[in-house]
Image (cartoon, rainbow, N blue to C red; front, side, top):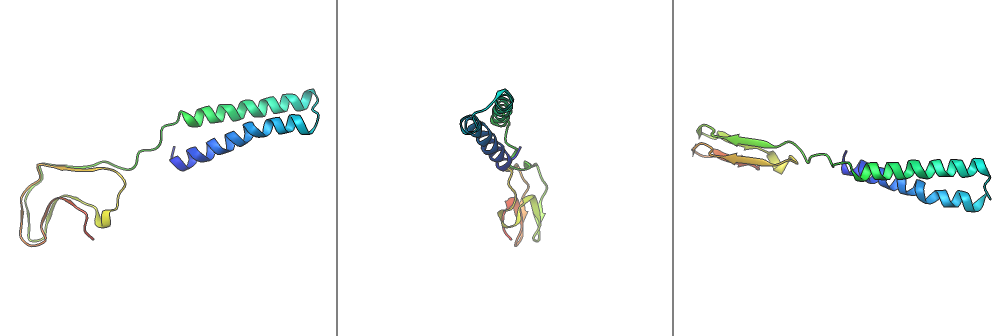
Length: 111
């Protein structure tokens, strides 16, 4: 569950739980209204508890480059993330040699 959805569910569940006393106080409820308000509060509390225990979605993919070859004449060994795009982690270990102009060994964040 993304953080945005988690916040939305928490806000709506809280609104459902907090609006229940308003139903009781404003309409001098009978048995049916009291039962409906109790169900509304129970569903709101269940949604709130469910949302609180949900784990947030991972930030993005995990990119790994290990033991890559040799980059020459503008080549790349490793990971390319133009303009620092990508939300996950990037790890480059034991990448190969980079020979020549514009060659990159590791992680390239350039455009």
